[in-house]
Image 1 (cartoon, rainbow, N blue to C red):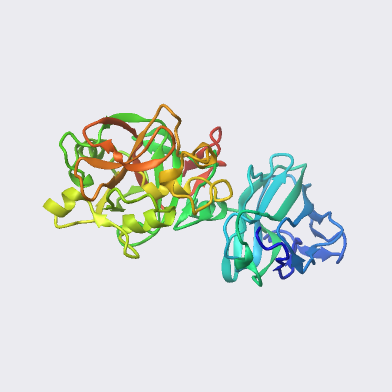
Image 2 (cartoon, rainbow, N blue to C red):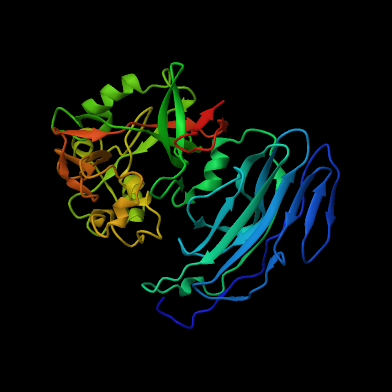
Length: 431
């Protein structure tokens, strides 16, 4: 942090369990100030800290706080509950600094990494954990850690005077959650809700003609045919093929798309939908392109992006396409590492160094595997974007007639409901 005297104002985040919504129990709040508990017949939530409030009003980078509570189930059946921040207001503007992490005992809800507290310019209820199961006769002890990380390399003064407030409470989780709800609760909101980090819990079984295939969720995006939200998913593992057998680079007309579209179809895969693919590209001058710039390039926003060379010469400079299968975008790769590990000012073209930009990026698949991206070169039809073996993204290495690695990308309906936790050993399973 460059300004040593910087003070950040946080407005009273009241971390206390207020209510339990149980249709068949009567709820009453017992105590106030210390040892706040909520008891509903034989289900009890006890706030075990000395106080429920984060009362510090002058919080500097490097600040942290911990809150704890327990949930005990003395009923005769298991119970599902949500952990929610009621009326969350978070106007902080930086990414990767104001964060939280939830851990618990006895198979309660557990996070493996800190993640940003969701942003909200107006108070709204925000689910942090959905339908957590507590078996009968069990007690789950929770620790919630809050922190505002210090970064000596940047000026964090953009957060001066910003506000964070809300109330942590428990609600009944009676139904299997929609996958979109889980993504919003667990992913990072950066031009869509995205899974980021070394190994996020984003595994899902895709159902192909009645059989399960392991895929991973890229995130939730407004990329439906009519602008509705869809969930883009990427197959685990790699195939290898040429981007195109000819020296052209317009995705709907390349041989790789022709092959994939006959296999990865809506008929073959349950709950899939067509989605809009954005085909803006660029020439060799992408050294300065951040992940935000690449996102704009793909979608032809903010004066970024140009139609691919083949599109501009043969297909009226078309830069969108609707279909069932594509590849990941350059921006998908750029955003797949946490901003706390790789600053968003670092261009994906330069992700070879620092090493954390690719080593802590779940879409990087190692030094022996370079992989195709969907975006075209705008001035040379013989090239498409790719991720190199050293971890950097480029648009001048991938000659389309070369055989390279790839993983198909499809889209799921946003309202599909699931069970499971999203880990590799317990993937989401669609109902």
